[in-house]
Length: 95
Image (cartoon, rainbow, N blue to C red; front, side, top):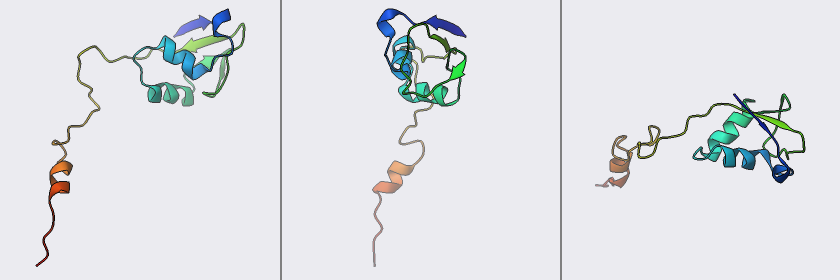
């Protein structure tokens, strides 16, 4: 866990945008997931994505894995791997 003290330039910024800046390369969907799960805390409490940072806030940022450069996305699906693309192109003939 990483603790970040809010500076003067970050006051009034939304927590989701703050995290996007500090967690470069992490998709916004993952940022919203860790916010929903309560893994990100401000001053020890859970917060919503619309929370605006205030002076003196301490943000707890959990360790997040970022994809390595050039590595294929393991969650991406190939169109040919599930066969859907082939079946959707076929048309049924009526006799």
